[in-house]
Amino acid sequence: MMNIKFKAPFEFKPGIIVSLLERSYAEISSSDPKYWNQEKKKWTEFDQEVFRYPKTVGACVFLTLSDDQLVGFGSYDNRPMPAFGLIGHNCILPNFRGKGFGKQQIIEILNRFRSMAIKTAKASTCSHPFFVRAQRMYISCGFIEINRRPWDMDYSQHIIEYEKKVG
Image 1 (cartoon, one colour):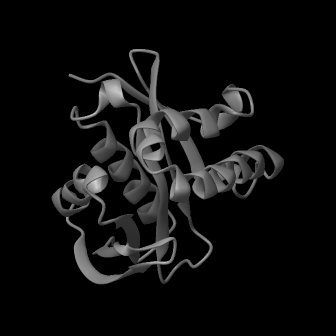
Image 2: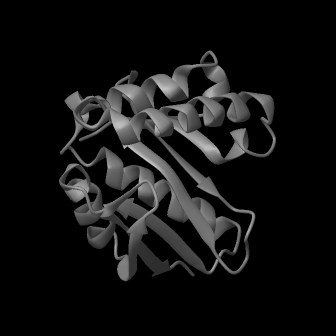
């Protein structure tokens, strides 16, 4: 049985979010730096916003620990509520993949959405083979694929959009 805890990012130092993203996506970012270096800039900005705006952006981020080991983090955007909430970054460090942590993070976000009376959860991921696990995870959590659109960073890839009724 997993002993999972979700903690606010402020129990850690700034830079933790970008560090988790860089380690989680190291395989894909090193194989395709042309596209992923631009994403790394966005990750740094996101990390800075989490700590700069603790009552808004920071309140929508949690770090996931198992037996006091950091395994990843989840995030969401509740600004469109109550119509819907967006699932944001949801990453798991490579050594902890395939153990259900990503799904537990999604369940935690869905529970938070329910407590805010959000009616629909929306999520997206990339069609790149690296993200097949994320695609399967969303489906296993009850999300339905609603759209595919070209990724503006690489038109050979698509952004897959999902939705799930929450309440």
